[in-house]
Amino acid sequence: VQLMEQVYLTVQSLNIMKKYLSESYMFGYVKPEHSELYLPSLSLNDAVRYFSEVCLDAEFVNLRDPTRLQKWETPIFYMLFGTPTADDIAVIDKMASFLNSVDGFPGISQTNDPNTANMKIHFCPSNEFSVIIGHNCDGNDGYVTFWYTNDEIYDSVICIRNDIGQELRNSVIMEEIYNSLGPIQDTSLRSDSIIYSGFSAPQKMTDVDMLILRLLYHPSIRCGMNKEECKQIISEIYY
Image (cartoon, rainbow, N blue to C red; front, side, top):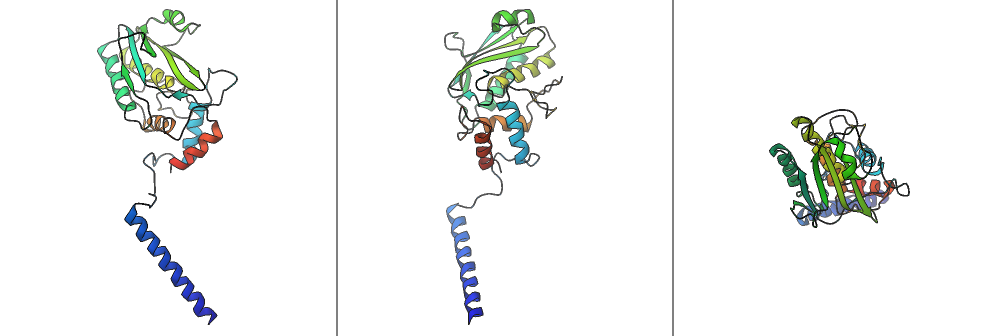
């Protein structure tokens, strides 16, 4: 009798599970194997490690908050200064198009009004960087600085050397705009990245570069989060 009761309970459990799965499929409750963010080539641990390196270990940041996340919450209006080439503009347009497709990104568009611009992109000789940026940044092909309050970025200035070859300039443009969005630290982990700390001149963002921005601007990731808080959220949305 006891054995029959156990068999009956097992059958009942299987029937309940079958019913639950059937209803889940019917009402769309089944969790997919992978999220839309998932990259087969990148494990969750590597995604968290890389995100932490570039978004939470900033080279140049206030000493009081070196491991808190900063990003934009309001629309970006960029203005070009100097003499950008048609190729320069094409690189910026392509990057802006991608950014405007990222879920949670506040939007980016060009303006010709200096009073509206909150991202000023200067194409100039490197000896003008210090005057524009406000401190010594000699020896760089490009440079970015941004300002934030309560860990929300609200203004930025970018300088790009206008006396280097177009291929290198393309790479520098992408790197400095990318840094200005929050991932301010260059990476030593991924040599194919547009923000690789060694010398390179990639001509496009990698899938992982784009993933970092999708994670950073995901609605669940908020300004001011620390590493542990970001890790918890990423573990929930990247699988």
